[in-house]
Amino acid sequence: MQFADVEVDTAAHRVSRAGKPVHLGPTEFRLLRYLMLHPGRVFSREQLLDAGLWATMSMSRREPSMFISAACAKPSTSMGPPT
Image (tube, rainbow, N blue to C red):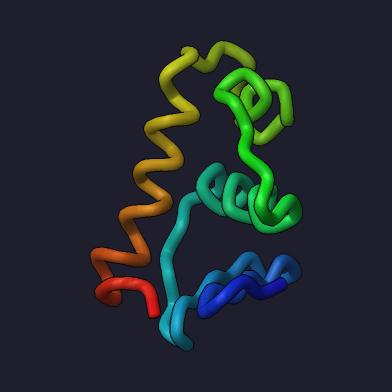
């Protein structure tokens, strides 16, 4: 699946941006895939918690925000601003 210059290979669990690999942890990968499956949609923290993306059921209400921040920062810090 692809959005702009971000490509997600769901079979191989690989992500690239502008052709360069982006290293995401398992939860970050699931979150990115989920968001790409629902383009243009905005989710509340509660909706993301209910989506079953998290490895543990005892996740705090702040953790989705932390994962989103970490996932968003990885491509931009490793490859510069989006194209």
